[in-house]
Amino acid sequence: MSRSVKGDTSSKVRAVCWLLAAVFFAYDLFAWGGLALVPKLGEQLQHDADLHSPLAATYLAAGRFVVVKTGQAESARRFAESRFPGMPSPGETDRRHALSEVLTAQKSFGALAYYAAPILGLLSLMLQMTRQKPIRSFGRRD
Image 1 (cartoon, helix red, strand yellow):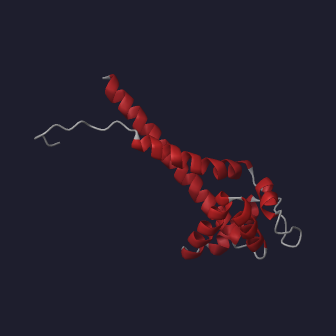
Image 2 (tube, one colour):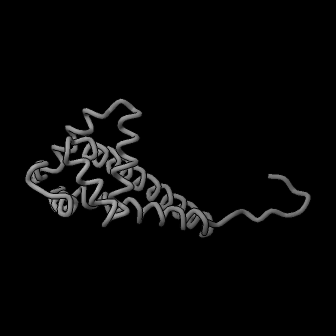
Image 3 (cartoon, one colour):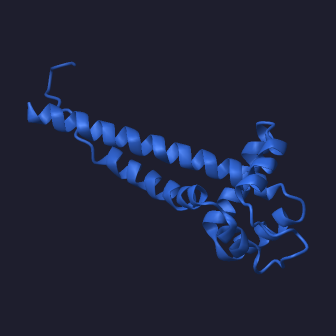
């Protein structure tokens, strides 16, 4: 009896981890894809992220690709501008500080999603690989 309860609990934990990772990744791709499309600032961010933050560079490049391919470029740009209220205007910052200024301008949910998405993704993969698997005997089909 305790074995099935444990199995049910671990499958629910795995499902919650996968769901949260997917939600956070979707948020990051949409928000950072919108940032990548802000005139001039997107180019400055991409340059700074390429040098200093592989995570931000990934969100910017993958996000831009996703929002452009889905036809959501304009709404993603507006969403990003609303989610980063203290975002510098393109003329106010230089290429070396664009990323740090945008990271400090993001709201608390954005900061959580920025760091939690890859952590929860890796945790989900680890939980998936270490889950309890059924034992199969020879000559028996399930």
